[in-house]
Every structure is written in structure tokens, then in C-alpha cells.
Length: 255
Image (cartoon, rainbow, N blue to C red; front, side):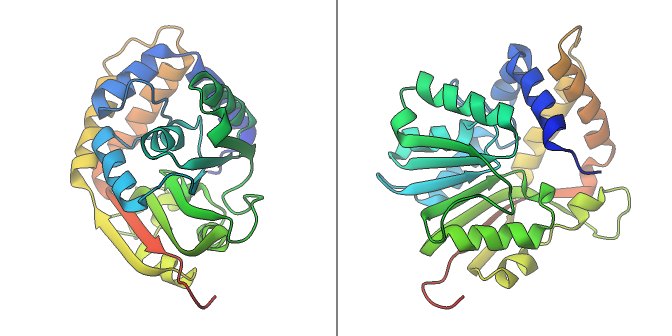
């Protein structure tokens, strides 16, 4: 089932009001204290992502489906790069803008409402693209990957973190996840040097997060209620997915 921007707006609004959910995610996934995440990429994974992106001072990073902007802002803080964040939730985008201001990074970060398949950015306008745990929401995924290719400058890098079905015929796994096949989809979108690597340690950390979420009394915390419900769904088919890190390069010539 596809979730609308309005549904995500409500989800983000609940999460912004929930320090309990943020503290849980930071602690279990080992994230930096100032990073506001609404994805499941942990601290060790973030280090790998930064190494794969190779961001540098003055270069532009597109944080696509950026949510509250946490990962892009952290990468900018570490590297000196500029961040262009795009998300289809207006609530998330507004919070990301406020967060950049609070961190003293408003001059290096710009956030806008847009889609995975239609960022609103100019062709060949960014040096790197990051998509954290969101490519499965694209409709369709190939169009989102072609959009990433379009906005990248020649030689620019794309890094995605996501999940793929262990068995694409396993009907316990959601159709959205079963359609992810980056090793085939990325070359078809025009990318070169494609690598898709399994990350079992990331998967193990996520299991620990979901299991601990089930032990917390949500009370009136809407974000924690949502997290507990998601934990029950995710853990029911957890072994049907594998965690992956995908990297690719926009060729310096060709389409």
C-alpha cells in the first residue's frame, strides 16, 4: 500500500514530538547525538556511506527523501559540502530547515518539497546523491533512479541504503520491497560501476531496535505507538529481507 504525503506529514509531526523515539533510535543504532533520524541507518553504516560518497568542501550533495535532514546535515558538518535536501513531506522539510538554522548551517543547506521521481533540481547540478532507506517508495523505482542519474554531474556518485527480498517470490514480503533489484535496475538507469553489498551487521542492529521498541510502554506517545506497530509487522517477516548498500557512478560520457 502506498502512503501519501499527508500520511507522512502526520507521521513526521508525531515523531518531532517524541524525544523517546529519537533517544531509542540514537542509542540502539549508535547515531551522533545531534542527528535526527527517521530512517534505520546506524552510526557505523553512516561512516560507510560517507566513505562511499567522498563528499568534499564546496561540493553539492542531494539528500533525496531527506526526511528531517539528519543524515545530510551530519555529512555536511563532517565534510564541508553543501546539502540540497528533497522530501515530499512539507512537515519534514520545514523541520529540516529549522534544524539547519539551529545548527548554524543554513548557509550550506537548502531543503525543498519534491518527489523521488521529480526533484525539481536542474540537470547535472549535484556532485553526489544519497537515498537512505527510501527508494522502495518510488513510483516506479526505475524513474527515481533515472532522476538521480539526471541531476548528477558526470563522475558523480550515487549511494543508496535499502532492503531487498531474499526471495523475490516470497509473498510474505511486501510487494514494495520485492520490486527492489538494484544490481539490475541501476545499470538500466544509466549508472556504471554498480556494487550492491549485503550488510548483515546493519540488519542485526535493526532487529535489536525493533525488539527493544516492543518493550517500551508507548502511553500517549503517538510516535512510539507507531514504532511498536511497525516493529510487530517488520519482525514477522524480518528474515525475508536483506540489508544492502548500493553504490554507482554517473558515467563521464554517454546517456
